[in-house]
Length: 156
Image (tube, rainbow, N blue to C red; front, side):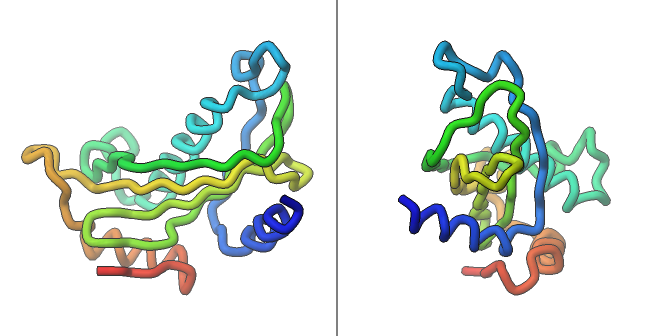
């Protein structure tokens, strides 16, 4: 486990996007720790913030309609626990792009750097009218490339 924690700390340099939160009372269980499902909510909020920051040219009220992405796979590994009032950071990056999908990676740490979770998720861009995957536009690909730099792979 210590090797994995050290790997996670080293990986932080790959992440350009960071959001911050504070554990709310409603997020802890009877043991006083954050319930495991709550981390998925934090990850979703961080991905939404990432998109909002990346796609600033879109109206924030409409970007979900104009660029609809759906989570089709998510996985998470837990390393430590957060408790009520803890401050945490969610680090977010897109590591790869395929025809219609993005591979997101996230790390959540306490403010002191203690790793809480690592996660990955695949999101697919949808054509809402046809209810089918849609190729990610060249405009979005360019925005991702400019934001992530050399740390992103285009696999299609």
